Image (cartoon, rainbow, N blue to C red; front, side, top):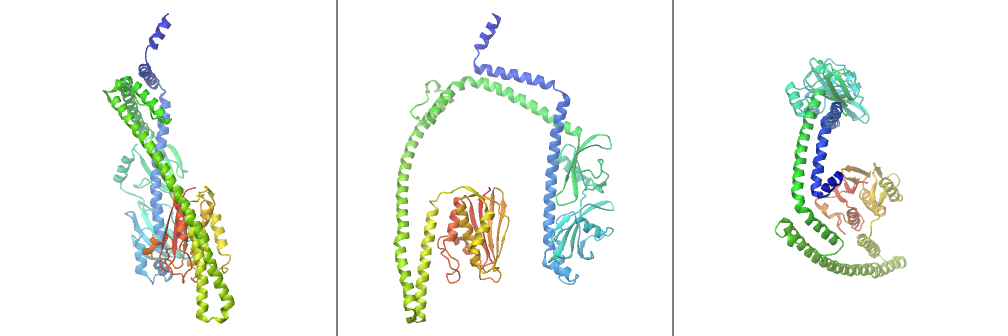
Length: 597
C-alpha cells in the first residue's frame, strides 16, 4: 500500500515539475561523488592538462621563432644573391664595395644583431659591420662546415660562447654558376635582460622559465646567461621530467627550432601547474553550480507558461512544412501575454508566406516561359550563324580559291594580294563564327565534376601544341600541378588556350621560355602560365578577357579575340577566378584559381 501511495504521488507531478527535481537530485549526487573523488586521479588529470598546455605554449613560441628564423634566412639568401655582393667577392673586395656594404647592412634586422661579415671562399673577411671581435676566437672553418650549406642556401647553425655571452651565426653561401665565391655571416645575440625574461614569464604564466641550446648539449642558456641545464645535456626533443636545484619536480618541453641546430624549451614546476589548474577547476565548479541552479529555477518558472503554447506552434510549423497554410494558432487564451503576441505574429507570417508562395510560383512560371523563349531564340540564332552565314562564306572562299587557281597567271601582283586577302579573311571569319558559337554554348553546357590530373593534362596539351613546331625551339618548364575537381574537357580547353597563347606570343623571341606551375592559396589552388613573349600594357589589362578584345594587331599575331573570354567563362563556371600580369616586350603571366581537390 505504501509503494502504491508513493507511485501515486509521483504520478501526480507533471514533467515540468519532475524535470527540475531530477536535475537537483543529479546535481547533488554529482557534487557528492566529485567531493569524494580520488585526489591522485584529479592530480593526474591536472598534470595531463598542464602538459598539453605546456606543449601548446612551447609549440606556439617555437613557431614564432621558426617564422622569425625563416624571415632571417630569406633576407640573408636575398642579400647573398645581389649582383653587387657577387661582383664584390669576385673582385676580391675591389669593386662595388659601397653597394655590397649597403646590401650587408640589410642583415641588421633587429636589436639582436651584433656583426655582419662578407668572407671570401678562403674565409678571409673582406667587409664587416658591427663588433669585429665576435668571431675572432672561433674556428671559422668549423663554423662554416657545421652549417652544411647547399648552393644558394642559408642556415643558422648553433650557439657559440663569447666571453659571458652566447651568439649564433646566420650563414649564407654566395655562389655563381655553382662556384662558391664566399659567405655572408650575421652574428646575433640570443641573450636578453632578466627583466624582459621575467615579464615574458609572467605573461606566459605558471612560473615558466625558458631554455635554448645546441642539440648536442654543448651550450645552453636561459636567455640571460649561459647555464648548465638541470636536465640531462644532449637531451632529445620531447617532454622531460627532472628536479631543479631545490629538489622541486619540474617539467620541460624541448622542441627543435626549424632551420637551425638549436633546441628551445619551456619549463614549469608541477606545483605551479597544479595550483593554476586547481584554481581554474574550482572556479569552473562554482560557476557551473550557480548556472545550474539558475537554470533550474528559470526552467521551473517558465515551463508552466511556455510548454503548452509551444506545442501549438510546433504542430502548426509541422503543418506548414507539409505545405498546409490554412491552419492558424488559436490565440484567444494567450492574447494578454508575449506568447499571445508571438502567436498573432505567427498567424500574420503564415498569411504572408502563403501569399509569397503563390506569387513566387506565378513568377517562376513566368520566368520559365520567358527563359524558354530566349533559349529558342538563341538556338535559332546559333542555327542561323552556323548555317546561313557559313554558306556565303564557303562560297566566297570557294570562288576565291578557284580564281586563284584558274586565273593566277593573268593577275598582277596587286590582284594576287587581293585574292589572298579575300581567302584569309574568309577563313578568319569562319574561325570567328566557330569561336563565337563555342563561347555561346559554354553558358548552357553542364559541368561534369570529376577529379582532373592537371599535371598529365598540361603535359598532354604541351605535347600536342608543339608537335608541328620546330624541335627545341621552345623551352617549356612544367612544375608540380596539384589535381583539381572540374570538367576535364573544359580544363583542357583552358590549358590549350593559355599555353597556345604563350607559344604564339613568345614565338618571335630568340629563346622562348614558358613556365607552367601552381601555388597554394588557403582554400584554393592558383595555376599559372608564364612566358617571356610580347607581353601587354597593364593599363589595358581589363580588356583581355572580353570577347573580340585584342591588344595586338592581326598582322603581328593571328587570333579571334575569343580564347581568353572562353577561359574566363569556364573558370567562373568552376567558382574560380582568372587574372593576368604583364609588361610590354617582357612577357605575361596568366593565373586562374580553382577550389582545392
